[in-house]
Length: 107
Image 1 (cartoon, rainbow, N blue to C red):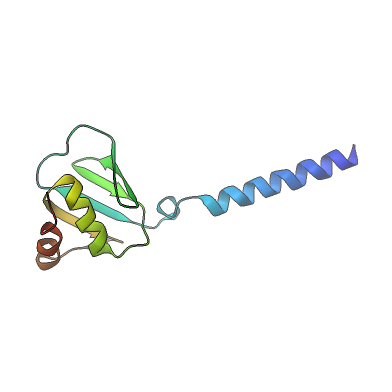
Image 2: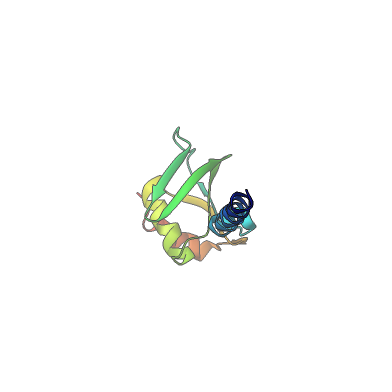
């Protein structure tokens, strides 16, 4: 019986530690990305551009922080959804020049 209790406690602790380390950064308070296209998004709850999974949120989409630079993430998203009205990375909005460069890749 003591072995079972020790095994169950070890297993439970391991499971909790594993879940804590695999929680997405977005859920841990990292702002990630927010994008609003010029035209209303087509129906659908999510889209994938390169290594970023965007989830529908109001007039645009949100995504957790990725390994790519923000300018690259914006350009890749613009290829999928079209011209971008606003883009925010880690709480910092792109200025007009950065948005113009992002929109060069828009479909």
